[in-house]
Image 1 (spheres, one colour):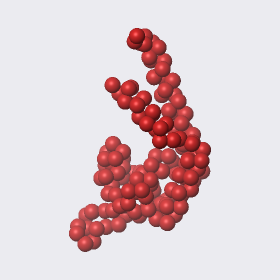
Image 2 (image 1 turned 30 degrees about the vertical axis):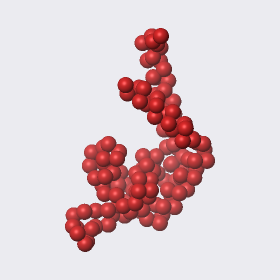
Image 3 (image 1 turned 180 degrees about the vertical axis):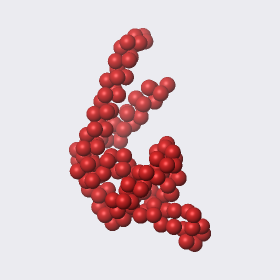
Length: 136
């Protein structure tokens, strides 16, 4: 039995509003550490996966190069990351690396998020399934 369209719309609206609420809470937690949650995600990419290029950040976050550059520059101005030129191969290449301060902020915020959210791997898989259902 298929769900009536108006019921499906309400369900999607409720899901969307709940996601917005989660995003708001994550941003509030992040702000206590001097970051937006969006900035935390970029910092996480740099910390967890090692050296990244600005182009890789743009691809991972599905954004334009200028938008990724703005996020990177904000983190750099806060001294959470630094840009390193590839002096050996091609000076046009830039690598991104977390600073000690950036690493401290990342670890502290990650600890807070883990403590306050309690999301398990199975919860994340369920969210992925919901997203896939909505996309289809």
